[in-house]
Length: 205
Image (cartoon, rainbow, N blue to C red; front, side, top):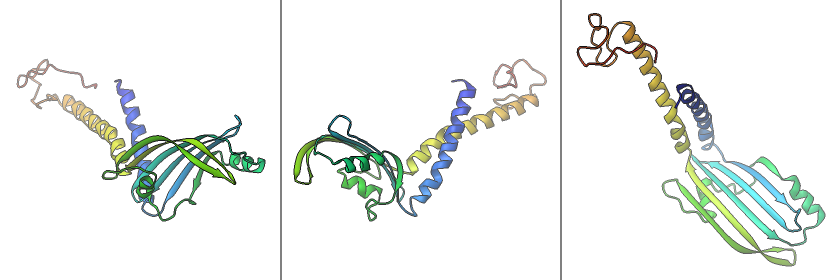
């Protein structure tokens, strides 16, 4: 991997990691629910595609639920109402008493030490007024502790810092006519280190 690309990725990873830390801390102070809704009625059948991200008590829960083939004769004003909900929104109107993991378990997931992932498809009867119909549903779920993305994103920057420090140290040793491997004085043998056999390398990394 080119060095410039490595350091660019390390910087992006570090910025993202730093941005996650206040969100992690905020999760212990309250609960945030980010929703992306996509309601469609264009095919004559209602379809909803909803993504929810729940952050609370050091956990983050991602879920995507799709309901399709619902044909229950929605009135025009109801269609207009749901259509206005499309897009991203920040909400606190869902299940105040449930944290992210409880919500995940309530949706049928199984967690292990704060981690969990499930997926499923099924048919379910939905009632709208006096009309009832069986619709197709699918759900994808992922539960993670906030510490996981923070630690994962910190790995590349740490390697970048280590590489940068090593490069600076090598420059300094070579500038002082010392072997960058064993630090033997190379003034008497500038081409090769007589101690470890390292061939003289440039001060430029």
